[in-house]
Image (cartoon, rainbow, N blue to C red; front, side):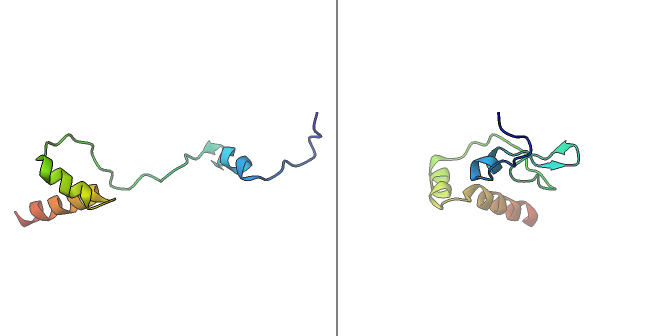
Length: 75
């Protein structure tokens, strides 16, 4: 049995398993929630429109959101 006074070896695996706490509260890992969260919706798009959006690379959903925002802000 290891001596309880011996500190553990601080390996990357140790930190990967570690709980992050703020006082007694365990802090969730990952990206913090945004102040203005988005809603998940189902939207039907023409196949060619969706193909062009996806072909534009990572971030295509954000760019589609920005294009829709510009459209609704014009009206």
